[in-house]
Image (tube, rainbow, N blue to C red; front, side):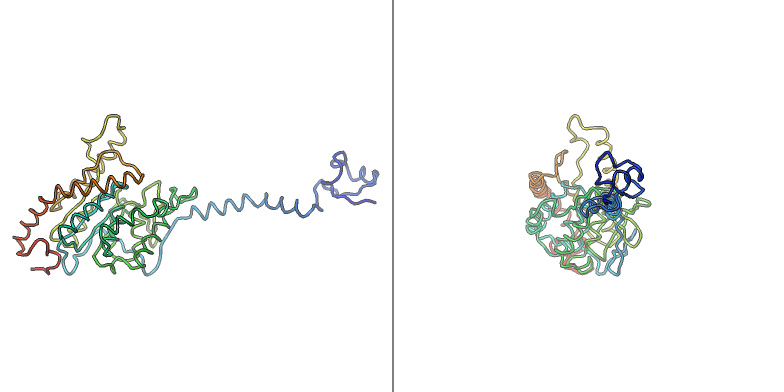
Length: 356
């Protein structure tokens, strides 16, 4: 009697009954299933059966919500307590995506003018650039850093990201590595990072804790970068609540506040701009307007309406921000002069003086 798995028998015999097979000189199992398959075929079938399970596990793992826990978790505050010693000059950097590269040009002008800043407040891209400036890097060093590696240095694209297509872990690691894993409160300049609490869209501020997590939360654009959980509470892009967080500088006690606004103005919109885009900019400007009124001086970056994620646009934004800041510098110095007269100190020494 010959033994042969049904799957390996001639086609005419595969679907025959056991009795027919026996009369034909073959013996097979009663079920039309191959129980004695070659090793390669069994492995292939196992892989095909396991693939849906493996894919599901990958999806679940990739889409899992991020939640940072630990002693270094940034502490969200809806209202900041006054800082001691009291900040003399604060620089507030707005959100704005690639437009934010104009901040580097403004920082360069402030450095050259000898204007000391002892508090930096940043939202979204403003928080990313702000923490590096707070760490003691010059505008030129930040400029060089911004040109090293491109967007893929910061963004980990994935089809399986949670509620977006960028996880944000690479941005977090990028910041922490280059800051030497120092917390926000350990940087040379005091710094505040603005973000939005997802549950109620309230503006929150981080002044201590893991710098990379704080910047990641501040930059988590809804639908693009995954929300950032911190101790069970989710946060997203600070632009959603407070694109220009002047109030944070005021709450911290800053005596003089310089703000940088890179948001385009509606009157600069070219023909053909969609109503939806106009509405988004209008809503952002409505959130910025009351904050700008609280600043002592607001730099208008002077950027054109259209923005782009291309390196050529980054160069344009840096150059335009610097040129605009140089044009507006005399007005800033005049405001600082008036402030100097009120405090009795030189405007370039405001940050080096203690409270009068």
